[in-house]
Amino acid sequence: EIVLTQSPGTLSLSPGERATLSCRASQSVSSSYLAWYQQKPGQAPRLLIYGASSRATGIPDRFSGSGSGTDFTLTISRLEPEDFAVYYCQQYGSSPPFTFGQGTKLEIK
Amino acid sequence: QVQLVQSGAEVKKPGASVKVSCKASGYTFTGYYMHWVRQAPGQGLEWMGWINPNSGGTNYAQKFQGWVTMTRDTSISTAYMELSRLRSDDTAVYYCARDLVFGGTGTNSGFDPWGQGTLVTVSS
Image (cartoon, each protein chain N blue to C red):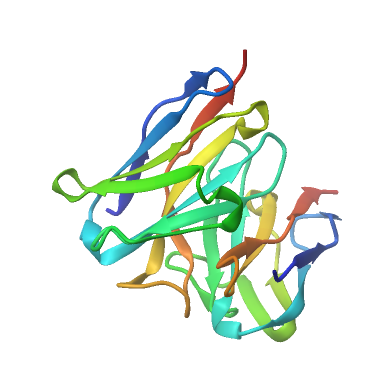
């Protein structure tokens, strides 16, 4: 089973700053199989990025994804107040087909 | 617009079963796999499995095999997830989520949209 480890666990930043979130896989993951989600309290997750770098419909261009192999990154170029939430990476593999990282909480400093 | 609407909250006793529904609208129900994901209180996301609404074929995470059953009724564009032999640690919000990929899953996959979630509480 591929394990995804996200870092940091909590990231404290101010609006307007740049956020860099990391997702590291225990084995190589195809870029086509890596996605990122945002979850706010009391809400369902929302797809941000799929295929490691493609933005989902309606996602602002301040969100970007990059990486390959075992290291992937979600970058938020300039934080807006509504961006403070928990972020999860997800990979599609063989067994089990889908796994999630444990999440990074992005909080207001 | 594409929308998934789930059934309401449930309270069950240990050992019982629960069946959660997910009604789809705004797209061709049989064209996209449906996934089920759960989230225990204050915890992360756990993928449970998927169903192909076209064929009825399923793929369950190993942890849930023999314990979860995913079905669908194409006449009413609704997917179901039934979990049996409930324990207290099955208390969680259960989500359905549509796959991004038409006719399959995997390459360039993602889950979008998600249902609003169904809280299942298991307590004696």
